[in-house]
Image (cartoon, rainbow, N blue to C red; front, side, top):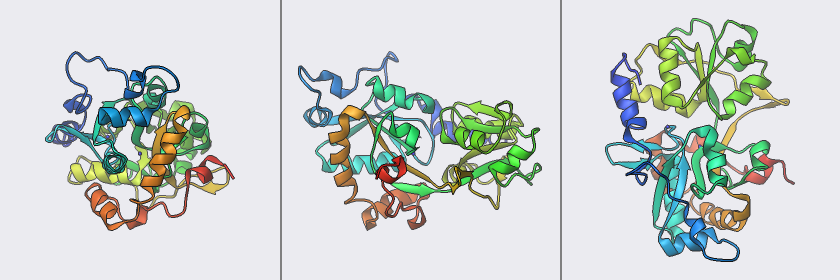
Length: 310
């Protein structure tokens, strides 16, 4: 399961305008404090997050400003992206018409969910067995391959994580808390080779400025960064590229929504509605503006399979 510098200035205005400069979210305005998520407002007894959200007519989602999954659209002053728009549709069908975004560093999304700063992670977060021990995932909404963003001409000849591991002079950029850091480590990339960035925008700028030789991300993230940069900025997508092989398996990432463990009933209800949306013509129209095609559909892959459950 999920948001700089362009020719030094242009990309910064374009990308940051779509994300970081826009502030925290379409809901978090004012004194900078974050009110508790809706589920904290229930009175006594077991908390029912979905019932509380229906009563309030809205729910908070955590996102990490990574296009095309979830990011702030400064022109519309609203959080958007594939993960956000699909969540909006599903939650509307469940009787929750309004979604409020809470901008959070990727590595802080799960702690923020557990601390009840928000009730759903809608950030295109990959489903992994380790994360499955911390949260309850919905079924995935997409599957996507890995990619590197590199300097034009790919001077270090990087076409896989293995290539980065073979050359200890290579500096590989990853976003804090993202799965790419794990892919790198399991592929043999040394800790001293990793350059950790807070978000995709900063990682793009890091490659552009030479702080990192490559930025490891999803192919859709790299595509989106280059699209907003009009293909410029002295960087490019590493092509061809080979997915990492982790524990003997070629890795394809699957992104989904995450819920607190105690909200499993909420996750199950969400899944039931999600199944009615994924793969429909309406879904295709919804995600096409973010670069998603039928090639990214998750097929029969479920959260249970990705979590290792039988």
